[in-house]
Image (cartoon, rainbow, N blue to C red; front, side):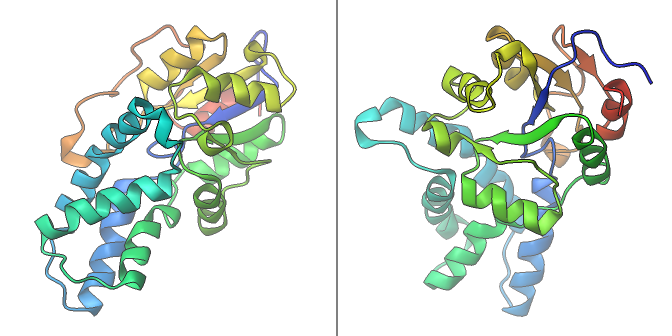
Length: 240
């Protein structure tokens, strides 16, 4: 195996869509949970609408800095409460709303994720760099068996990606300069933001992330340092 020239010391990963299959995981989880309660809900529709509210909810935080940073669990709960009536979820109890909100803590990895991450960990520091909050990412790692060395979260920096503070903050906490860190993602816009700040980049496509609604990120759209079919192929390219 050959290692890429100027190999980084740490790899940081987008999580939702890149490491875990959020859509299929949530739909399966909620479908089973709803069946036990005889709830007739369009769970796929709810999950898709919930994800579509993700970026706008973060933008609202950016627009109102005087209100302070909100962690992703809080944003997920707020958008769930807004969406629930549209999908016939009325009068849900606090434990029920909490269960649905923490569905994002119980996401399953893509089939190659754990094996590929384990290989990469043998040579590099590996960590998530996600808009998910620390508790969410920690619980997800326990649930999915993700072998992180540490958890890096937007919550630590009080800034969501693609704000520069997240990428540069990750490098700073690791005691590294940006070019010693590689951002791994299935999203070209995430990699573009990281690259602009000096980080190395690796694209791993997840072309079924959004199911039938997938409209972008089918292929690499930038001059990324590495393009790999999955995490095992990335491990090959990184000499693991």
